[in-house]
Image (cartoon, rainbow, N blue to C red; front, side, top):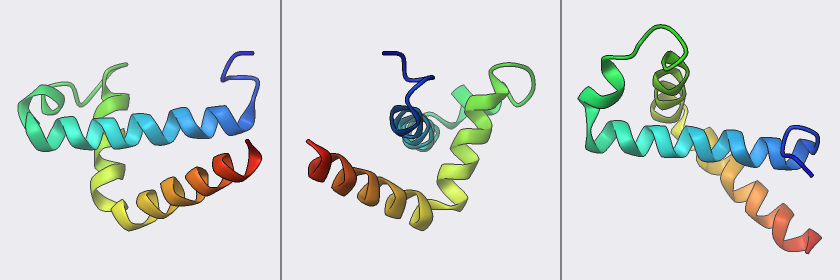
Length: 72
């Protein structure tokens, strides 16, 4: 089943994209900063969300991990 049709999987993919983009921007800031517009701007925006809302993103990651652990 695709992650698009399963809401829980879609949330996991979104959280992973946000965390990955924030990590890449912390290591190589010029890689994401040059693509602020267009389709690749999605990754720049995800990095900004990961930086500015890091306590909320980490809480969502913890809740998702607990949810996955209890469901399996």
